[in-house]
Length: 282
Length: 282
Image (cartoon, rainbow over the protein chains, first blue to last red):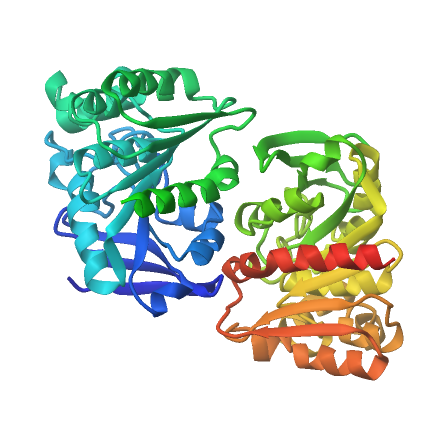
C-alpha cells in the first residue's frame, strides 16, 4: 500500500498534499488531494472525504472551495479523490462526453463492459481509500464523514446510506438525489450497470433512503438559481423520501446561488461544522 | 465606456462578476473580475485592486484566493484585472515564454516595439480601470488600495508609490521588489522599455521608494520556502531601501510557505484588514 506524495504546500498552518497510489479497486494509479490541519501533528483527527462532480479531478475542491481555513480551525482532515479511474487503458465515453467515462465515475462499481474493467469507484471510495488513509495519516476512523457536490453529492448520500459505519456523517451540495429518474443518472447507470431497475435502486439515494435510512442528520444545500435544479437534481424527490422514511434531513434552498464552486465556498464552513456536530453527538 | 458582464455568480451574499470592455489604454478588449460585497447594494464601498502574477488571467485570484469571504464580512469590493492585453493582434514573446508578453505585462507602459502597440498596463490599471469602475460600480475612490502577488506585487508596490492619491493603501505577497536587479525584471524591462537604467528606475519599487516614499504603511508577506525568493524576489533589497527612506514597512517571513495561492489564501484576510485599517487612519 505504497503512497507517493506528488505535491505539498503549506496552507493555513497545515499541509495541502496531492498523493497517488496503485489502486487495487480500479487497477490504475489513483490521485487524491489531502489537507492535513496543524492539529494532525499532535494526534488523530477526524476526516471528511469530499466527492467531486462531473469533469472534476482531485484539484477542483482543493483549489476552489476555500475549505482549508475552517479545516485548520476545526482540526479536520479533508480528502478529495479523483472522480474516475484514468489512464491509457481506461475506457472513456465513445463520444468523449463530459457525463460518462473519464471524470464521471458516478461512485458505483461498473458491471457492464467496457467500464467493468476499471470503474470501481464505490469500492475505491468506501473500502480501499479509507484503508490507505488509515495506513498513512493520523485519521480517526470513528469520525469520518462524506460530503460532495452534484455527482459527488450523489456519491456522498449513497455511500453514507450503504456504509453508515464507515461514513458516520454526511452532507451535500446540489446533489443528484435520484439518478434513476434523471438524464445524467439514467445515462451513466445504463452504461455502468446495465438496465436492471433493481440494481439501479441500490445506487439511488432516494430509493436507498426509503429502505435503509440511517440515524445521521443529513444536510443539503441547494442553490435556487442552479441551472440543473429541476431536470437533474430534484431535491424534492429526496426530501419526500426522507420524510416518508423518517430520515432526518435539513434541505436549505439558498436563494440566488448557482451550481458553481462560488456556491460551495459560500457554505462549506457550515458543512464542516455540521460534520463536527454529528461526531460530537455520538 | 460601455461594460459587458460576461459572468455572474452569487458568492457569500454578494456577486462575483467577470466583465469586459474596450480599453483605450491597451487598444483591445480587457477583462477583469469584480467581487461586489452585499454592502454594495446600499452605498459606496472601498475597493482593493489585486494584480496577479506571471501566467495569470482575471480568473486566478477570484477562484483560488478565497478572498470573497472576508470581503463580504468587511464590505470591500475586489477587482482583479488580467495581467496583459490579449488578442490576435497582441505581440507575444517570440518563443512563447511564460515571463514575457501574454500574461506578463509587468504593469508598465511599453515603449519598445513590438510591445508598445498594446502593453500599457500601468495606464490601464492606474488611470483607465479606476474610471471604468467609478462609472459602473458603487466604489468609494477615496478608499482604494492595491495588492498583488509576485509580478503583481511589483505592480502593487510601484503603482502605489507612483500614484499614492489613487491607491492609498498597499500590500503584497511575494513581490518582485527590485525588477531592475533580477532576471525576470531585466528580461521584461529590456523588452518593454529598452536599456536606459533611468527609465527602469521609474518602475522598480526599491528605486522608487528611495526617492519618493509615501505615508502608507506597507505590508508584505513572503514565504520562506518560496523557490523564487533569493533569485527573483529579494525582499531584503526593498526592506533596506524602506529603512533608508523612512518608509513604513512590515515584512513578514512566513515559515514553510511557498509561492502558490495556498500561501496567498492563508494570509489574504490579514491583507484585507490591513487595507481597512489604513483607510480608517485617514
